[in-house]
Length: 387
Image 1 (cartoon, rainbow, N blue to C red):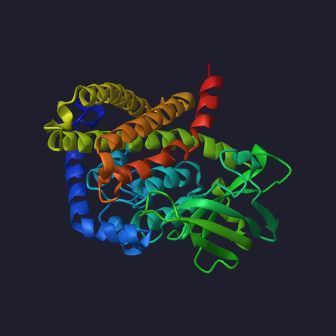
Image 2: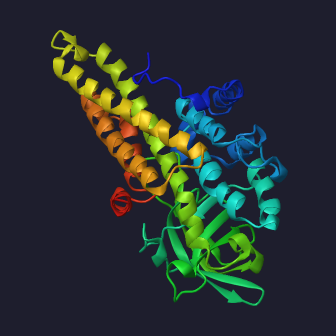
Image 3: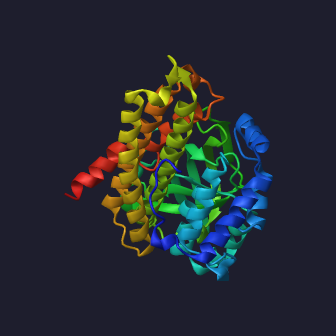
């Protein structure tokens, strides 16, 4: 029995979804065995070829309309790709970033020409995406970005630096958050579409050495007079970037909450198995009342969290998930994840400090969820403003 036994929500009770989940699971089994994932962890990034394999198997652009080369699915199909990835331990593959964070910018805000040009390549895996928001001196306050994209003839010149960019070493299509009007804050921001191949002045910095997410590449990016044509402003109009970003953040934060929820379930299941088999003082660790009480408390709160996340997903499918609620989900579930993983590690004793044990990697990997997608302090600010 799973550690959290919540009935499957109605929105997932669909035979077609079940068939898709089975196909995705088989893909991960065949193409991402443990040995291959271990190599990604050692290399600090997923090999480029895997993206092509995923594209050929139909795992990229799952909800992109068919007219742009996509598969015409919806958010439930995207959930399946992410959920099956977690269940099969496929670390580092940034499908959620590519599918549910970046591609929606093009689908919802791109011009017809931009959609036809880029989406088919992003669906096939010919292009792998990243979004460059964070700067060395600018984190969650996106209105303060200093990277510029200033007019030059029939296009723009991008100048600046970005850091902590997921997929930074791999991506060959990057959405760059830049100021087309440095004198403005929100109204001065535009999203620039950049294909990196042959882009003079574009340079990838070092692959950053993180405390977790070993198989996921995170990098610095540098732009020195990088030229992009005028038609590469997302949506074809300057000054819309901040509002485009704000429009997509609820889904991004929901995705983070969903990932944290999966992490909570994995931690509880791993730990339950450990404490029921590990013995100390003539009995299993599970036989101690303290273990039972702590695990019962974690299960109760995790169950409530899962019901809340499922409700948020149901609202999102009906386009009813508002910004404060998405922030609540991101904030609360990631905070709970940190507490669950920490207490579960404690039950492992010294083994919990050894990276060979899954709980140790969960401990390192989970720390970032309270930071990316907007720090939890920012989430609280947004929630408070809604009160």
